[in-house]
Length: 413
Image (tube, rainbow, N blue to C red; front, side, top):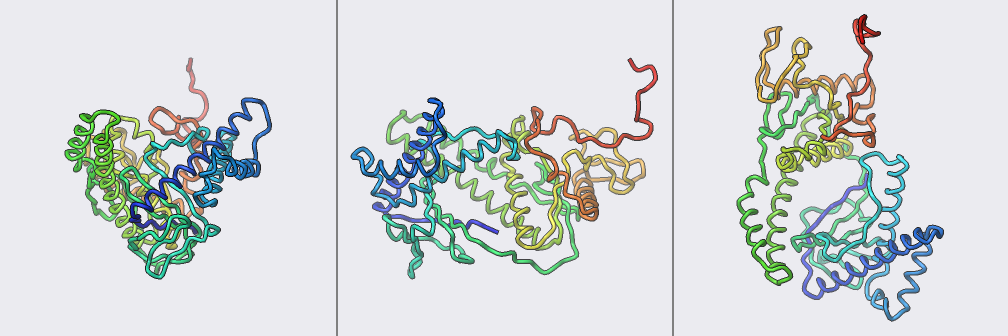
């Protein structure tokens, strides 16, 4: 399994200038390659292959107009072309239907005003970690690093990133093996929500931190200060960075919370089951701000890869499964259950907390799927299929009709 380990970098003024030069050169090479392929397509010529783009890059370095490309590591420029090739491959795979997920567009030109700038060094660039704990990058120097944890193995590559807040990070791609944890008998079903971030099948409820809502006052103050600055002024640039730093603090706090919670759940349970929510669809409704603030997708993704790494069972339950309306005691389904109803009584006499009942049903459905040896419904469903306005499937998956529902009814028009 290939994982990424990210660490904070603290380059000095000269190193920041060298990194800015590298960011700019990589951006120019990417845009030149994209323009060459676009011009060839418009002219009806053959597709410009990767080898041809590399030859053109080598020739461009010998010209006065592009001689400054030689001031940065050649690996950075070649990786920019590799990124362009990957973007085109993903685009064509999406067009043909080979790539699952939402449709993606063709590559776009990179701008120096993009909030995120990145370059990548592979082993060919001979980057190294010095005895003093600094990251040695070719034609940049030894950059101080804050090592929050040690790398598990020799890194395959390192990506240097500058985010919108002006912070620098080193993201190491590391090949790691599975690290199975000791087996445990407990399993858990998780129901995600707004009032509580997660409700577990054992009755525990984890409060929703609402990081964005809690920081709304500071964010509003920073955004108002930004709106008063003249466009193009130096003060506006400083205000933009302040807004970006405020948002970065929110994102960092959310990431830290989801990492800790997902690690705890994976460590304590042999199997973890969650509902396959249509997050992209919910993010286009009036609940969009709360959906983004919750960070469900990030949390589920962490559960999935950590379960694979540590030898745990993980499955997503089909989003059409009636987890809330299904009685976990007798198995009957309530006819209607508005969102405002948080507690309901079944005809069998059982009284349910809506979220705890949903978590228990998710646990039972997950066990049934795993016991049957079937792939979870979320894995069978193709994300590329037609979606409705809320991002969900146009209709629920087909199912066998009951005996009294099969056939045409008499008198039907």
